[in-house]
Image (cartoon, rainbow, N blue to C red; front, top):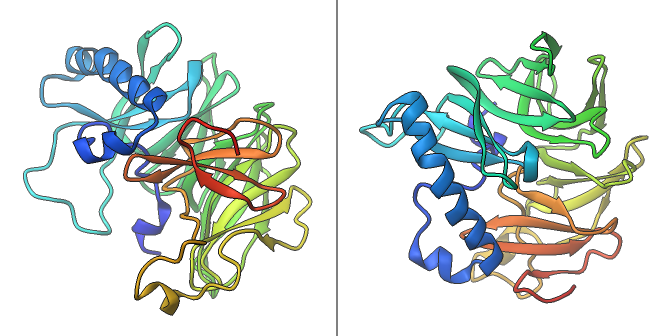
Length: 288
């Protein structure tokens, strides 16, 4: 499977452009500036002056940051992903601590008091607060998103064997049980789960246009809620006014209510979507 479909590049803070900043909600811009102020000196102290943090995973006290050893001299190929060391950054206090110094992870996510770590081979491990570590699953592509209770994590799974579909969406509990919730043609990816732990939202390209779908933890028949009726050829002459962009990753999705999801649509823009109605709009500080 092409690595680019893993969508782990969430919010790259090293090179936020002025243009992106102009489109960004002021609160998000303040969060980025604050994160830079705290993380840049801490990363240089712990990893040396060439090291840079490039990714943020999650929000709040459980936010994690991915660190690369140094910026590559040449741009990475499309399918290449840098392997990361992981630090924890507490948005509330600004405290930074090292989770793992080894540059071997694609991404990471806090799951309750533990940390889920996905390595470059697609093995997902859970590091508990007491330091013990165990394997949760293999063949994991990325897009980690924990439940509000911290009793499971959603992820995009890689295709195995003779499967025709490129990726699927699954929920993985803390015992390592993997349950596939969505496995349609092409790519199903970028999942998140509502605060009550019942509704699963993800992105699928099965209609040729990346669109939001909803299902449940029981794996009910998925329902398309955005870009209904659009096909990729309709975008050749410009983006239709009805088009709702997909998220760049699961890591900067946050639920502002049981029904409304806020997500990073790329280019400095955040959107809100009501997952019951499919109504969506850029988040410019107003309601939905």
